[in-house]
Amino acid sequence: MCEDYRAALDEDLAHDQTDRAAGRKLDCPVLVLWPSSEEVAGRPNRTEIWKGWADDVRGAVTTGGHLQPEDRPDEVTAALVPFFCVAMKTNGKNSVSSLTEKGQVVKSSSD
Image 1 (cartoon, rainbow, N blue to C red):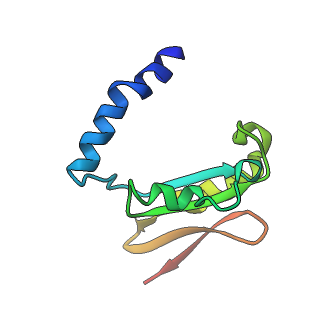
Image 2: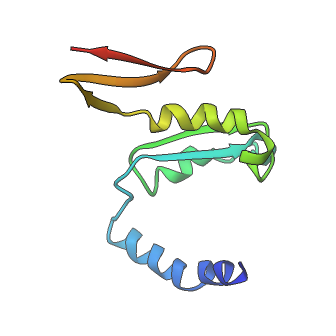
């Protein structure tokens, strides 16, 4: 674990600086979750910060603490499920999973 923190200050930082200088960004969707207790007035939210690293950034605030999946699993799931829902080909039709108001996953399809 300590090695991870050391790398962040050394080679990870160098790689990040190289990527920024080259204009490289993540080319995949990014979901950023953060606890409301860590929001600071006058500072940009985490979504805005990550837009410097990726073009497709979505974010949500939870009421949990640092270990959000353990503190607020329902809130984390409510953010993850729609993020991961994708269109799939099923029997020649496009099928898209989505959340209902009750948090149940349902399938709707379009021709």
